[in-house]
Length: 508
Image (cartoon, rainbow, N blue to C red):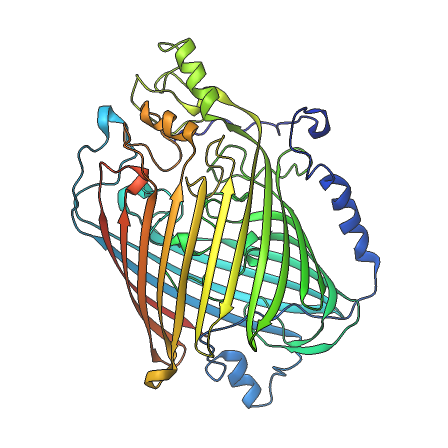
């Protein structure tokens, strides 16, 4: 894709825009209130999240604690690392056409191999009571199927990045300041872990986070579909496929978040940066004029003594992007002057002169979505999950996948019943849709950041993912994963595609 020369931030008045959904119009004032909270007294730690495959005895922190060199119950600092290698393969599959009329975004129907390799170091330091700093350098090397083109909501390997290469790239994934304010309630222990210092936390507290991070570090968590280094491999199970959260091409962002915990309830709000143009690396840090807002309400419960949670999530992006209808209108007004080959600003390099292009329609736009996330333990060793999200589908993919609506459901079972308590098996189903405007744009030969075959016989993209994870050695897991993808890129003229993954993951 082409990148234009650096430009100043795009500035316009959010309050002057008419006929916009008003639910989030208070967000600028709320940001000021969140910042004001930093003057309160401090006491608590971050929240515990379930860990299906915990190997506490085999870690640097655990080894130091055994020698009384580290207090793993009340930490001043910690250090963790992870490494993950995922190999991907799809055999040849049927396709009525591929890259029709030169449109470049089809998944190759020929057999392909791909891989990702990642290493992450997580460091944490407690600076003062309630004040914590975290830093996480990360390395990724990868080879994607068809340069990461041709699949909508069901991208088979969650570690794939839009700008990744086979050469190892080191970067800062997270650099975080976290401040926790106790508001009372009951006190419980917080375990040591990556991006989490051991200590205690009160059930009523406010947590403020600022810096560089993934929004999924805070929002849309799910015990059974979220940590894809140890669960499903497909991106459709990492979060809502239609959750087009602000992020750079690696999936990370900058901004701040506030979390208010009150016993079994939690309310979260965040404002984060997106890219200057969709799917590119550089982040637009002008958070007053170009940003993504999200708000989440969570309730944890017990059903017949078994833990569960319900989360409602809404997001609103204010960004420079293109609507599909505007791109089509520009092309129809001037097909020889405003087609995919004549645009010199940021575009996706579509050589089809008879197709519209999003580059002719980029301007200040709003994109919104709302979703629900449910998890529920069925027994002590079986857990289920459900996610569903509806995004408006008017504008192009900003940072995540090409899905405009999505649903995923599934279950995970630990291996306790066959004497392998640190093994697990999972079965998941995901389906995603795109809007009518999106379908029309693709049918005319247009492309977005991921998909565009030159034509489309529209059907929802559907995915089945099944895996078995084997606890091979202390703190080491090997996973075999099979995925069946129907209607890749929402196109019934192509596929289905069988995808085979192998994963090795270690933690220390």
